[in-house]
Each structure stands twice: as C-alpha cells, then as structure tokens.
Length: 90
View 1 (cartoon, rainbow, N blue to C red):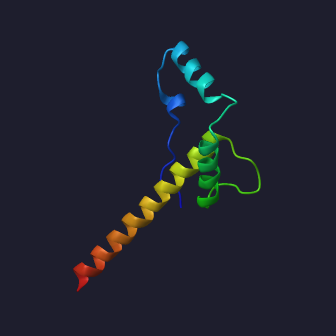
View 2 (view 1 turned 90 degrees about the vertical axis):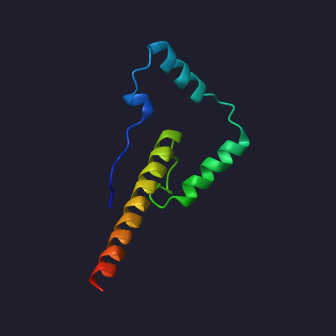
C-alpha cells in the first residue's frame, strides 16, 4: 500500500559538485556517535517495512522510514474519509 516514494535530496538537488561531495564526505565518516547508531538501530527495529535479516545502510533506512510515514498518512486519511462518509449517510 505505497502512496508515494520520495526522492533523495542528493538525487534531486542541483548542488554544485563541491558542495555535494562535502555532504557525502561528511556522511561517510567512520567515527559515528554511538547514540546516533543506537537510534538508527532502533528505527530499523521499529519500522516494519525495513529489512531485519540483513544490514541496511543509512540512506536505505531513511527511505524505509519515509515510505512508512507515507503509508501511515495514507491509512489515516483513508480512515478519516471513511468516517466522514459514514457521518454523511446518517
């Protein structure tokens, strides 16, 4: 039940090559804060659409989270419209 798949800001932005390479260099640092890693692992466990049987890179994890949020929004909006329809018929 996918509503919309978002695009990565790195793919869709028109950053200068120097600016985008700095972003990539900063995101590939080997010394991640342990707290950030803990929260990334927690996100992977919480999001049901995220693969649990294999390691997931950060961008894939973020994409899974975004897709899951879109799915939840879709479910909420469809349940709202169903409740509105039932209110109208009474």
